[in-house]
Image (cartoon, rainbow over the protein chains, first blue to last red):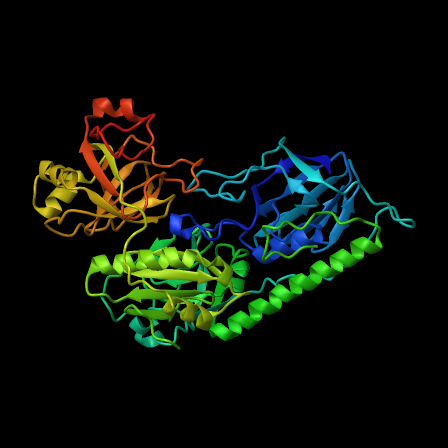
Length: 339
Length: 247
């Protein structure tokens, strides 16, 4: 392992991020973690890290970093390109960047969040097993211009015999950012209280309100008519719950949600759709498609299999390029995908 | 599908969750059943269980979509033996100083008017009997508590505050909460405790567990600063020292 330093030249809105704190809801702690976990996992795998590794999440802004040492990295999410000095490089791909060059993740034209994963282990202390920011707990590592992030890495450089910088084609699959955004959802436990939506379907188009945050998206549009006055005692709510608050519109809970709530839940967005919502900007249009649990499960398992085959391709490509395994698989990451 | 040993309805709650609604006759039994199911299932992470959020009369069970599914988790829930409805560990008691009214509890007058009693009555009702922690909710393990029979139900704030200060004590319906950290909130605020509830170095972040008892004690604004360095600790088993939290 060697120490690398990542100097932050210009930070917009960027945090050190990972996949959050699932399994702490019984303590009143939200998952949080990468808003677009598909992009986050893919970036980590492309950088030769475990899919759950810490990386940098950039929201609706530009980030420029630099290192004295060569880096193996990947950028995914909304950013259209990566700039290495002034040269345009692809996103959703493994990149080798020689020391001294600046790496810029530009502000996206569409979508909201980009991810920069660098091979190695970012030296940020976890709380409850995660480095993810939790604004309510007041924790997390925000990047500021002039900061230095330390990194333990096994990557010490790679020089291709023909061209100075090797090119990889790993075949990672970006999640398309569509307009309107498509959210898949299953029927919620309280759909029977809404006579026009007994099956949990929400056929109207909605707009993401500017009053949205990491806790949830406020969706502007028709409010389903509720036939019941029955008050719901506070109870656990899943990430993705589509609630019908009395004030109108819909409230779609994201990974920073409060773990309990008392509004009726008409539908619940699927795990995969929640990743897509990580790219939703205020003002964007959104449509909700009803699926059943079996369809959602099959789709999620297919996506996971795609990540596993990506990790396998990354391993093969690194071996062919003469790179030793970059990261030991961690015994704790039992559900994890390793490159 | 086998039938369960306890009365409950189980419905799908998203693509990786189930909502268990307990239908025992009494509210205490419904809460106990949730606690029991939570402690049984949280030990079954090997079977793909990710989390269990037990509340007053429900439990939200979430699972790993890659490892199990709704049917298998329904079977797992049905197989749980909740006949011995007892919370794990004996309840502990915490005493918490609170400054009532004024800027610390800006809704005290409103709550008194809503319950048709004086503000002194509200403070007396709030401090005489102890409150039972039913669950640790958000943000940051916020204790949701049941307590004495109030003369009526307290309304929710129709315009939730964007920032409720840490330590604020709120009422809504017949329940009471304390905000461990500053956050948005819609509960009616009657006071504020100077004692810190949150400890980021603690594995569970807060000292109390469901079933524990919280006893509030009215203190004067002048005494506020003497408590601000205190963290919440339970009273010693023996030799109780009413109101004296440890620093």
